[in-house]
Image 1 (spheres, rainbow, N blue to C red):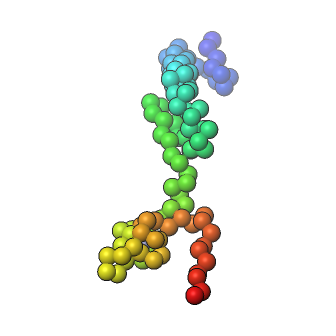
Image 2 (cartoon, rainbow, N blue to C red):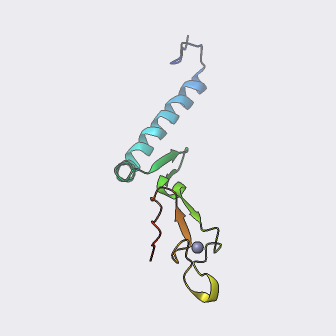
Image 3 (cartoon, rainbow, N blue to C red):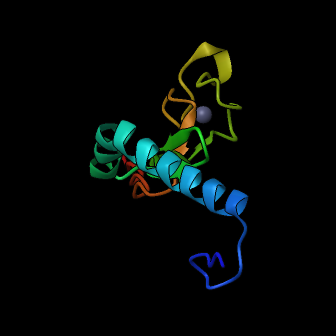
Length: 102
Ligand SMILES: [Zn+2]
């Protein structure tokens, strides 16, 4: 009688498949270990699929296109946008700039 890891009766094909998947994950861990370590140190999010690892910097969630200039960074007359100062992007986690009173 074949009994799988969950204690359920399993046939030979199921056991071979489970072992192949386990070896696949082990190989994936070994191949991506250095890259995953770098991503963890950088604070990036890692999403894993069967044959690929995707990395994403969560800081990009804080940035949006400037609504005043549409992300172009240019305001009236071709000058730099006053809202984003020509960057075209706004960062939600930066403290707002103080307005100068002259
Ligand atoms: Zn702007």
